[in-house]
Image 1 (tube, rainbow over the protein chains, first blue to last red):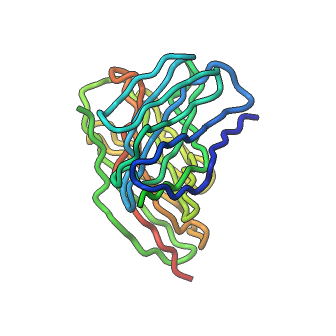
Image 2 (cartoon, each protein chain N blue to C red):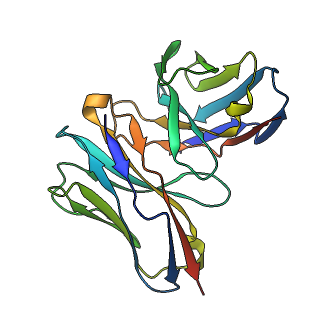
Length: 113
Length: 115
Protein backbone atom coordinates (compact mmCIF):
# COMPACT_ATOMS: atom_id res chain seq x y z
CA UNK A 1 0.00 0.00 0.00
CA UNK A 2 1.00 3.59 -0.48
CA UNK A 3 2.19 5.86 2.31
CA UNK A 4 3.22 9.48 2.35
CA UNK A 5 5.62 11.02 4.83
CA UNK A 6 6.36 14.60 5.75
CA UNK A 7 8.97 16.06 8.02
CA UNK A 8 9.45 17.79 10.21
CA UNK A 9 6.07 17.66 11.91
CA UNK A 10 6.56 21.03 13.58
CA UNK A 11 9.00 23.84 12.90
CA UNK A 12 9.62 27.22 14.51
CA UNK A 13 11.87 29.48 12.48
CA UNK A 14 12.95 33.13 12.73
CA UNK A 15 12.09 35.61 10.01
CA UNK A 16 14.75 35.64 7.31
CA UNK A 17 15.92 32.08 7.88
CA UNK A 18 15.83 29.41 5.16
CA UNK A 19 13.28 26.61 4.96
CA UNK A 20 13.26 23.07 3.68
CA UNK A 21 10.24 20.78 4.07
CA UNK A 22 10.40 17.29 2.68
CA UNK A 23 7.72 14.95 1.41
CA UNK A 24 8.22 11.37 0.26
CA UNK A 25 5.81 8.80 -1.09
CA UNK A 26 6.20 5.02 -0.91
CA UNK A 27 4.45 2.24 -2.75
CA UNK A 28 3.77 4.00 -6.03
CA UNK A 29 5.71 5.28 -9.01
CA UNK A 30 5.45 8.46 -11.06
CA UNK A 31 2.81 10.07 -8.84
CA UNK A 32 1.55 13.60 -9.21
CA UNK A 33 2.70 15.54 -6.15
CA UNK A 34 1.23 18.65 -4.56
CA UNK A 35 2.09 21.22 -1.88
CA UNK A 36 -0.74 23.02 -0.10
CA UNK A 37 -0.78 25.65 2.62
CA UNK A 38 -3.58 26.04 5.14
CA UNK A 39 -3.90 29.18 7.24
CA UNK A 40 -5.50 28.75 10.66
CA UNK A 41 -9.20 27.96 10.35
CA UNK A 42 -9.15 28.19 6.58
CA UNK A 43 -9.27 25.95 3.53
CA UNK A 44 -6.34 24.68 1.52
CA UNK A 45 -4.47 26.74 -1.03
CA UNK A 46 -2.51 24.90 -3.73
CA UNK A 47 1.05 26.20 -3.92
CA UNK A 48 2.88 23.85 -6.30
CA UNK A 49 2.32 20.65 -8.18
CA UNK A 50 4.56 18.31 -10.10
CA UNK A 51 3.82 15.68 -12.73
CA UNK A 52 7.37 14.33 -12.89
CA UNK A 53 11.01 14.73 -11.87
CA UNK A 54 12.15 18.30 -12.32
CA UNK A 55 8.68 19.45 -13.44
CA UNK A 56 7.21 22.08 -11.14
CA UNK A 57 4.17 24.29 -11.64
CA UNK A 58 3.56 27.23 -9.37
CA UNK A 59 0.01 28.25 -8.61
CA UNK A 60 0.52 31.51 -6.76
CA UNK A 61 3.38 34.01 -6.65
CA UNK A 62 5.10 33.79 -3.32
CA UNK A 63 8.24 33.56 -1.29
CA UNK A 64 8.49 29.78 -1.68
CA UNK A 65 9.86 27.36 -4.25
CA UNK A 66 9.53 23.64 -4.85
CA UNK A 67 11.73 20.94 -6.31
CA UNK A 68 11.36 17.29 -7.23
CA UNK A 69 14.81 15.74 -7.32
CA UNK A 70 13.52 12.16 -7.31
CA UNK A 71 10.34 10.47 -8.49
CA UNK A 72 8.85 10.16 -5.03
CA UNK A 73 10.41 13.16 -3.29
CA UNK A 74 8.98 16.67 -3.20
CA UNK A 75 10.68 19.53 -1.38
CA UNK A 76 9.33 22.92 -0.39
CA UNK A 77 11.93 25.63 0.19
CA UNK A 78 12.49 29.25 0.96
CA UNK A 79 15.67 31.30 1.08
CA UNK A 80 14.24 33.85 3.54
CA UNK A 81 11.08 33.20 5.52
CA UNK A 82 8.44 35.87 6.07
CA UNK A 83 5.95 36.08 8.93
CA UNK A 84 3.20 35.41 6.40
CA UNK A 85 4.75 32.02 5.58
CA UNK A 86 3.43 30.64 8.88
CA UNK A 87 0.83 27.94 8.40
CA UNK A 88 0.14 24.27 8.02
CA UNK A 89 1.82 22.73 4.98
CA UNK A 90 0.36 19.61 3.46
CA UNK A 91 1.85 17.39 0.79
CA UNK A 92 -0.40 15.18 -1.31
CA UNK A 93 -0.03 12.58 -4.05
CA UNK A 94 -2.26 11.29 -6.79
CA UNK A 95 -1.84 8.34 -9.10
CA UNK A 96 -1.00 9.51 -12.60
CA UNK A 97 -3.84 8.80 -15.00
CA UNK A 98 -6.08 7.52 -12.27
CA UNK A 99 -8.97 9.05 -10.42
CA UNK A 100 -8.39 12.59 -9.25
CA UNK A 101 -8.34 11.56 -5.58
CA UNK A 102 -5.41 13.06 -3.72
CA UNK A 103 -4.03 11.49 -0.57
CA UNK A 104 -2.44 13.70 2.02
CA UNK A 105 0.51 13.44 4.34
CA UNK A 106 0.39 14.32 8.05
CA UNK A 107 1.48 17.91 7.45
CA UNK A 108 4.07 20.30 8.87
CA UNK A 109 3.13 23.14 11.19
CA UNK A 110 5.42 26.11 10.52
CA UNK A 111 5.58 29.11 12.80
CA UNK A 112 7.72 32.02 11.70
CA UNK A 113 8.62 34.43 14.49
CA UNK B 1 -12.35 30.20 -12.15
CA UNK B 2 -13.98 27.31 -10.36
CA UNK B 3 -15.36 27.96 -6.90
CA UNK B 4 -16.48 25.68 -4.08
CA UNK B 5 -18.84 27.06 -1.44
CA UNK B 6 -19.57 25.60 1.99
CA UNK B 7 -22.10 27.87 3.65
CA UNK B 8 -22.10 26.27 7.10
CA UNK B 9 -19.09 27.38 9.16
CA UNK B 10 -20.05 25.13 12.07
CA UNK B 11 -22.64 22.62 13.19
CA UNK B 12 -23.65 20.70 16.29
CA UNK B 13 -25.12 17.24 15.91
CA UNK B 14 -26.36 14.82 18.52
CA UNK B 15 -24.59 11.49 18.72
CA UNK B 16 -26.32 8.77 16.67
CA UNK B 17 -28.18 11.30 14.54
CA UNK B 18 -27.54 12.08 10.87
CA UNK B 19 -26.01 15.35 9.66
CA UNK B 20 -25.89 16.93 6.21
CA UNK B 21 -23.04 19.18 5.17
CA UNK B 22 -23.72 21.49 2.25
CA UNK B 23 -21.46 22.04 -0.73
CA UNK B 24 -22.08 23.85 -3.99
CA UNK B 25 -19.73 24.37 -6.89
CA UNK B 26 -19.54 26.70 -9.83
CA UNK B 27 -18.22 25.44 -13.13
CA UNK B 28 -19.05 25.12 -16.81
CA UNK B 29 -16.72 22.13 -17.19
CA UNK B 30 -18.80 19.00 -17.92
CA UNK B 31 -16.14 16.66 -16.53
CA UNK B 32 -15.21 16.85 -12.88
CA UNK B 33 -14.86 14.93 -9.66
CA UNK B 34 -16.23 15.86 -6.27
CA UNK B 35 -14.55 14.92 -3.00
CA UNK B 36 -15.06 15.18 0.73
CA UNK B 37 -12.22 15.18 3.20
CA UNK B 38 -12.21 15.04 7.00
CA UNK B 39 -9.63 16.95 9.00
CA UNK B 40 -9.49 16.06 12.71
CA UNK B 41 -7.60 18.18 15.20
CA UNK B 42 -4.38 16.33 14.31
CA UNK B 43 -4.46 18.14 10.96
CA UNK B 44 -4.27 15.21 8.59
CA UNK B 45 -6.66 15.34 5.63
CA UNK B 46 -8.54 12.06 5.36
CA UNK B 47 -10.26 11.18 2.09
CA UNK B 48 -13.89 10.15 2.67
CA UNK B 49 -15.80 9.86 -0.58
CA UNK B 50 -15.70 10.58 -4.31
CA UNK B 51 -18.39 11.34 -6.91
CA UNK B 52 -17.72 11.65 -10.63
CA UNK B 53 -19.76 14.09 -12.69
CA UNK B 54 -20.92 11.28 -14.98
CA UNK B 55 -21.76 8.83 -12.23
CA UNK B 56 -25.44 7.92 -12.33
CA UNK B 57 -25.73 6.86 -8.72
CA UNK B 58 -24.89 8.73 -5.56
CA UNK B 59 -21.67 7.55 -3.95
CA UNK B 60 -21.72 5.77 -0.60
CA UNK B 61 -18.86 4.70 1.70
CA UNK B 62 -20.00 3.15 4.93
CA UNK B 63 -21.74 5.85 6.98
CA UNK B 64 -20.92 8.50 4.39
CA UNK B 65 -23.09 9.23 1.39
CA UNK B 66 -22.93 11.99 -1.16
CA UNK B 67 -26.18 13.60 -2.27
CA UNK B 68 -25.22 14.64 -5.79
CA UNK B 69 -27.65 17.01 -7.54
CA UNK B 70 -25.96 17.87 -10.81
CA UNK B 71 -28.50 20.40 -12.06
CA UNK B 72 -28.22 22.34 -8.81
CA UNK B 73 -24.44 21.89 -8.74
CA UNK B 74 -24.53 20.59 -5.21
CA UNK B 75 -22.70 17.72 -3.56
CA UNK B 76 -23.85 17.47 0.03
CA UNK B 77 -22.26 14.99 2.42
CA UNK B 78 -24.53 12.98 4.69
CA UNK B 79 -23.04 11.33 7.76
CA UNK B 80 -25.41 8.81 9.29
CA UNK B 81 -25.40 7.63 12.91
CA UNK B 82 -22.91 10.28 14.05
CA UNK B 83 -20.16 9.22 16.42
CA UNK B 84 -18.03 11.32 18.76
CA UNK B 85 -15.06 10.61 16.51
CA UNK B 86 -16.81 12.39 13.66
CA UNK B 87 -16.06 15.74 15.32
CA UNK B 88 -13.74 17.46 12.85
CA UNK B 89 -13.50 19.93 10.00
CA UNK B 90 -14.98 18.71 6.73
CA UNK B 91 -13.87 20.02 3.37
CA UNK B 92 -15.59 19.71 0.04
CA UNK B 93 -13.30 19.76 -3.00
CA UNK B 94 -13.60 19.46 -6.75
CA UNK B 95 -11.21 18.58 -9.53
CA UNK B 96 -12.11 19.90 -12.94
CA UNK B 97 -10.73 18.33 -16.09
CA UNK B 98 -10.28 21.71 -17.79
CA UNK B 99 -8.07 22.79 -14.88
CA UNK B 100 -5.88 19.72 -15.05
CA UNK B 101 -7.83 17.97 -12.30
CA UNK B 102 -6.21 20.11 -9.63
CA UNK B 103 -8.37 20.22 -6.54
CA UNK B 104 -10.15 23.37 -5.42
CA UNK B 105 -11.30 23.33 -1.79
CA UNK B 106 -14.19 24.96 0.00
CA UNK B 107 -13.74 26.84 3.25
CA UNK B 108 -14.82 23.91 5.41
CA UNK B 109 -17.49 23.11 7.98
CA UNK B 110 -16.68 22.31 11.59
CA UNK B 111 -18.81 19.52 13.04
CA UNK B 112 -19.09 18.91 16.77
CA UNK B 113 -20.86 15.74 17.87
CA UNK B 114 -22.55 16.01 21.26
CA UNK B 115 -22.87 12.94 23.50
